[in-house]
Amino acid sequence: MPELPEVEAVARALRPLVEGRTIRRARVLHPIAVRPSSGRGARRAAQDLVARLRGRWITRVGRRGKYLLLELDRGCVVMHFRLDGQLVWFDSHTLAGHVDVALDLDSGTLGFVDRRHFGRVQHFTQPDDLPGIRALGVDPLTPEFTAEKLADILRSSRPLKLLLLDQARIAGLGNIYSSEALWRARLDPRRRAHRVLPAEARRLHKAIVAVLLRALECCLHPAPDFRDPGWWFQGLEEILRVYGREGKPCRRCGAAVRRIEQGGRSTYACFRCQK
Image (cartoon, rainbow, N blue to C red):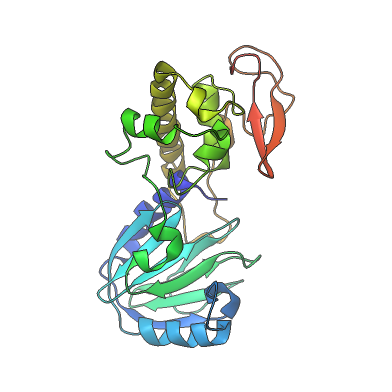
């Protein structure tokens, strides 16, 4: 699943392509991609999206947590990639391959693609109209995410890893980079958050920011190539220290990396040097 660094890289690479452009037409080829969580059905939502986007002007591309925002002169398009969603760009209005939602601009076409149909493209008057965005916690790449803020978040009896995954506490931090940050901070993902000492909390704060910035740098070099339908982020596996490395030696102490399950998701850690 794309996490904060991947979505931020997409936002930065997309800005020169679409900011200041007009949406001439929106096409919904698979209505499930615009289906709301409740209320109107997919077909009605598709009709509404097409009507609301026609003639709108993209003023800014932004991000909130793992959500990509296309801010318009009236309203906002909110995209969530879920597990496999991604964007593709066509220099003309002729599509190729699987596309769920297409936005025809005066300069080409932006396509939202998700073959598994978990991702969503929706329109709101403002981003906070979406409950998932309204509930988001602090963004770890903003000045508001301080060591003191993290210490306050850690006043919980929940295991560290599960707390870090809570989007209502820290927005955009997901399964991969929470495992990486805990490894970097030498903290056991099973530890109760309120048992983390002040010095350890400061170390974790530094680790979260450093891991996210390193991943963002990797995601931007090379930057997303939306014209290549097979594009994906390259080289991320080379910067990972524990995630996906079950049975391999810890890059710090040499002990075998282990995989455990927490909250139905995989956690990777070295339990020799993470205490």
